[in-house]
Image (cartoon, rainbow, N blue to C red; front, side, top):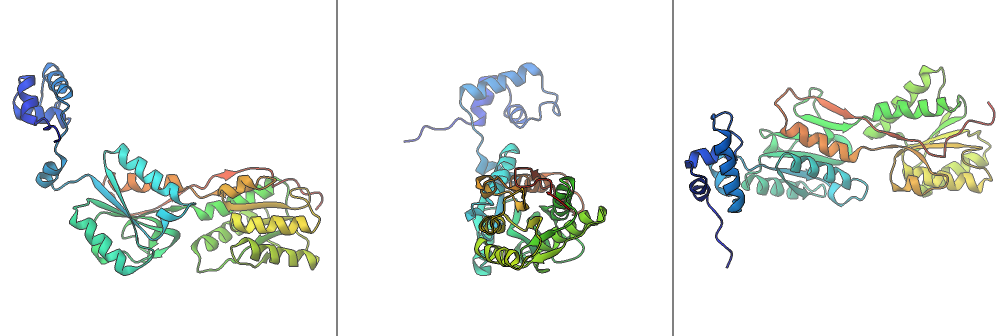
Length: 340
């Protein structure tokens, strides 16, 4: 049989104060109520001696505040690359004294509706609505009148209806270009990947790359079109080299593409970075495993989660899109070109 938990009345009696005084002290409102320091210390000491813990269920029924938030995502929770979004969200929630519930829908609208309804039945205070890939989403009807922050996604309206926290892909593209420019590259720079206009990250990265190169009077020499996977990149870069295309620097749209590019460059008898510099995006674990280690611009997963919770629980403000910086991890795959 579990031991009976101490009550607020027992804390008050041991401290020699009224129940309301004990309640104000434990809620941190002693200054508002002008409670003496001596009384405050007696209440805190009594609570510690009795191992007092507030009845959160009773409090939530009284205040209609449960200090819980829910993260509803498509596949973030099960993706190894994006797991730090959960870690960042959880850390920020704990820092603010909240519990974080996590639900995954696998993109199924029926599961999503039931999941959100279950969270609402449990009186969850607020929601993070998250996507594995940055994209435009339609906020579910059940959430439209609730406190919601979009995490790694945007509303479909041009005017933000909800706060959104996304990676700053545009600036990341600029930084990619500047990294190569600072190493001395001006020509022979090729983009590797399929820069589909329908993929938010690809579109933003490409726009940033063009802007960054344009600032120095440079431009992309071309695009080596391939899927965002190693084998497709390996074949596409291999064909380009076999056809005699002059490759001096490759900007790969993700680290998996870079892996395929590494293999093709090596099989062609060329060295990275002596003959071809390679730069990428995502800064996954793969980037540090490659030899030479890959210069890559990281997705700020942890910071995205943290910032989304801070925004959700922070002061009320008009909705805006917050773009979180993407750090450049400079490694051994970029060097000064041999000649121009």
